[in-house]
Length: 101
Image (cartoon, rainbow, N blue to C red; front, side):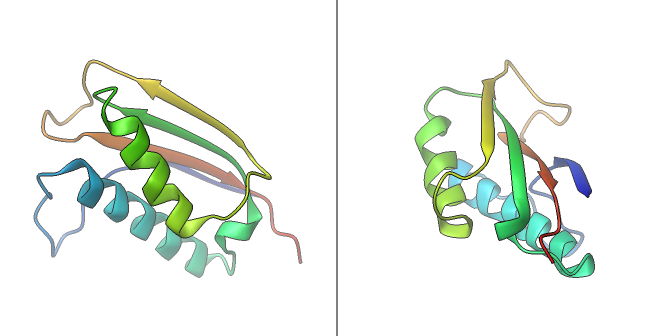
């Protein structure tokens, strides 16, 4: 099993993007890198939990998630929050995955 908590739009070599879509893409890029280290893929996901700071980001997050994961063979929760630990961060994603091989 793999638990990746609190993935944000942070990379040492990339400044924090300003828009919600670019931030969500960076969250999922970070998760993809974690999966690579664990010899897993998005096909192994059993649960996503996401936090966004504005209701308007819900469809943005969903569209980005769909680029990485097809279907809906996983549990998913999205919570709209008043803010995250770094004021400019608009989304945060947690994932639970179980290796299928």
